Amino acid sequence: MAATEPTTIKIELGQRGDEFLRENNLPQKGSVDRQPAGLNFYRARWSTAAPGTVVVNHRQHSFNIPFALTLLGTEDAEALHEGVRSFDITAGVTAADTIQHDEARRLILDFIQTLTERGWKPAISYNYPRLKGEQAYKYFEEDFTYSVPLDYRPTLEQWMAMDFAYWRLHADDVFLDITFRRDRKRMDPEQPGAYLLSFTLNSKEAEARSHFQGEKDRANWKDLWVDKIKELKKERYAKEEALRKRGFDIDTNYEEPKIHPDDPVEP
Image 1: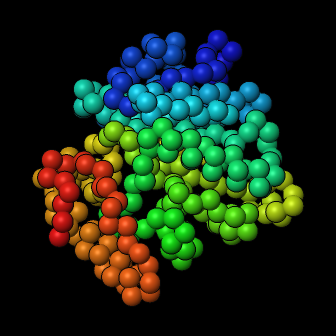
Image 2 (image 1 turned 30 degrees about the vertical axis):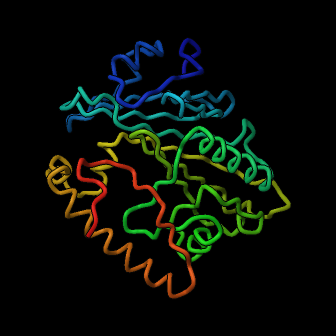
């Protein structure tokens, strides 16, 4: 990123791309990639020596992403009224290239806790069981494609056993996935590791479309939604029934985020 460009960038889902550029004093040239497929990409990049900060504006749920390295916003040129529908950000845990594993664990989990204090709630995929706390983490240890529960702090030993992990959250029609990856060659818990965080923010519409394959189905997601969610929830309930037999407690108080007018959909 050039020296004349900002080290802090403010983002808000639903904001028009031209407004995003103007508010952040970003030039069209070098900041926008207009693809023939009908997507506009808004980009920013910082160096590891001088990372930036991304300010996520979402009313009382707002938060900052420090040590940002890249930012990518996606806008549909055929639906400019929806504004930028998703943002992808990568960031370090600290400004340094390496960090002790236990310190990384603490900082990331503290960040997750801050989000929950600001009203972010768990978003459990429709085909996954509704679990929380220690039982949710136990299930995650069996299936790493399950999101890490927001209300559980893994021990250092558990942290070091993670090959891949992500947290799924939602707040007022915005969905947030946070993923960490690390250098698998630096896995000695007594030595520093190297971490990279990824943040994906999706609008309600972008989240809904992600459940479908093909542009035609994505465009018609509202008509296809009920049947799709019924199918996914049948998978969920089958998994939950098997877990009940093993002594798991299903979190029937879990509140599904409302995406479609007919939600909550049941099989």
